[in-house]
Structure formats: C-alpha cells, structure tokens
Amino acid sequence: MRRLTFLLRPSWLILAVLVAAFAYLCFTVLAPWQLGKNTATSHRNQLIADSVDAAPIDITAVLDSKDTDSPAEWRRVTATGTYLPDSTVLVRLRHLDGAPAYAVLSTFRLDGGRILLVDRGLVAAVDGTRPPQIPDPPAGSQHIEARVRMSEGVTPGKDPSVQDGYRQVYSIDTTQETTVLQQPLTAIPTGERGGYLQLDENQPGAFTPTPLPQLDAGPYLSYGLQWLAFGIMAPLGLGYFVYAEIRERRKEKATTTAPPTETPTPTTAPTKEQRLADRYGGNR
Image (cartoon, rainbow, N blue to C red; front, side):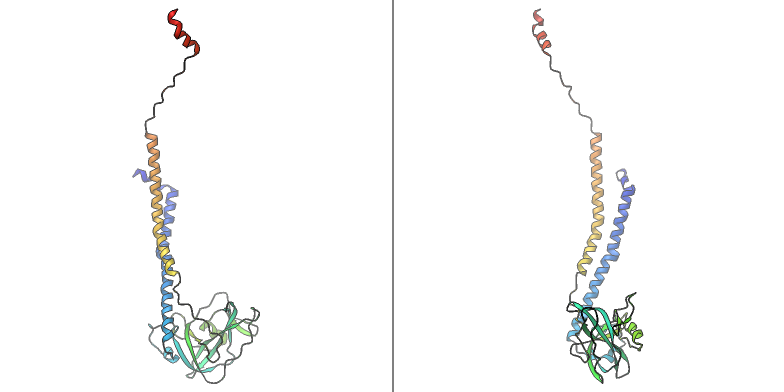
C-alpha cells in the first residue's frame, strides 16, 4: 500500500475530485439533458406526423376534453366564429425566407363566446426594420382550420411595447396577450402552458403560414451518448495516469537499488625511459 501513498498528495486529490465531479455531471445532468431532449423531439415529431393524416376536429371538443393524457398540441382543428376588431398584435424577431419578419396575432370569438388567440402567419418587414401595413381580418362569421400550438412563454426583460402604430411583443403567449389586449382569452389546454391556434394555409385572414418544424430528431441522441462515453473515459484516464506513475516509480527504485558496476582501473602506458630500462637493464 505504501506505493500508493503518492495519491494522498494535494495535486492527486484535486485531480481525483475533478474527475469524479465531471463523471457525476455526465451521468446525472449532461447525458440525461440531451437524451431527454431527444425523447421530447421524437415525441413532438410523432405528434406532427400523426396530425398530418388526421381529420380536423371541432375546437370545442379540445376545449371541453377531460382527457389530460392525450396531448392537444399540433392537433388540427376547426373553429367557427368572428375575428374581433382592433386585436392585432405583432411578434418581433421572426423570419420569412431568411429575412426579418413579424408574426401577426389576432383574437377570434367562437360562436359559444370563448375568445381564442390566433396566429395568422408571417409578413415580411419593410426594409428589414419596420412592419408593413397590416390589413384587418375579414369581418363577419368565419370558419377556419388551424393547428393547436403551445404558448412559447415570456422572455424576461423583453416587455410588450407600442411601435410604428402596433402593439408588439417578443413571443406568442396567451397569458401575456391577455394583458396586452385586455381581453379574456381562453387558453387551449396543451400541458404546462396554455395554447393558441396557428392558421393553416389559405384560411380567412391568413398570411404566410409559420412552417412546421422539420421531422428530424436532431443530434441529441448522439450528444447524450457522447456524454456517457466521457463519463466512462474520465475515470479510466485517471486510472491510466495512476498506473503510469506507479510504473515510473518502480523504474526509479530499480535504478537506485542496483549494485554499482566496478570500473577497471586504466593502466598507464610505460614511458620511453622505462621501456629502455626494461630492455637493457638486465645487461648492465
């Protein structure tokens, strides 16, 4: 055990703590985070794929449903009612064909009286900096087809404002737009946040529809597996360094304990006088 006492040095202890903390984060935070995103993305893609072939249902069936296990987001629905006047809100920082754009929101009163938030689609910004003139939605009774979408939530520090004659926000959120419009909006049950309607193409009052996400699971599964691999490799790497240190210490110990090699004493060549004395000394 004495050969391992070097592991108690501060440098080795710090390294061991860092490796253990990194491996712990890989297994408990980083890998689950990416794998969870992969699961959520795959689930979303399945809902979108299922909704493509599904026939639309009346929105009241979704609003009155007690089935909390059946997700409503992405479901195709129909609604009958009227657009409310003076209910236009623009969503900033959107893109249309790679250029700056705005999403146009309005409210829609169902025949039963409930008011829903509707995303009418995208319009290109003028000179990339300001909104164009937004036409009002058609008046009178309308029958629309749309998809249920979940509210995006609110970004802290980005408050609603009035610019260029329009109320403007940074995200589509039913609760926020309730305050902005001073209208009692009904949030469609979609899970953790209330939902709204996103108009399909060629619907009354629609602009360019917001495109559906690509049905691609993304790199999250690969990233999750990589974090798991890093969590395994880090302790293995530490073990290799410990082994290399022990091996070097063994080499040093073997070198210091080996008996010294005797070095032969070099003989000095005889001088010329000595050679002459040895040669003729016996004859004198």
